[in-house]
Image (cartoon, rainbow, N blue to C red; front, side, top):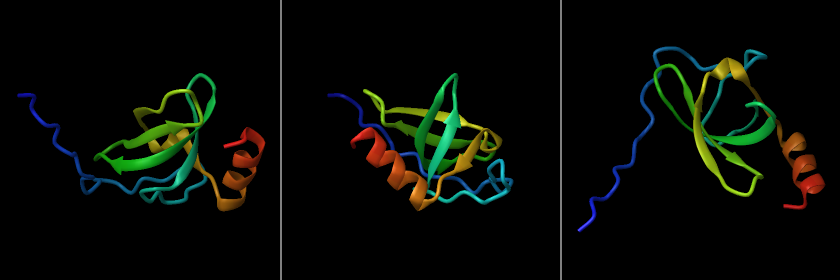
Length: 88
């Protein structure tokens, strides 16, 4: 019998997570992240110091922890144009 994985919920952050432009993050938002190359990710949860994201638009989705200062929030128009240009 294999043990089931426990879902890790967001914790109350010790600081307000803000992007490079000073805007506050919310779960489910799309962000641009520089991780060797520019990629699009979705905010999944918060830890006391970092933001858990899931990278999308690549062959495999990967989950990572990043500092909030390494990301910028994308608005609806930015995501719409990205979807149109990448054929998703």
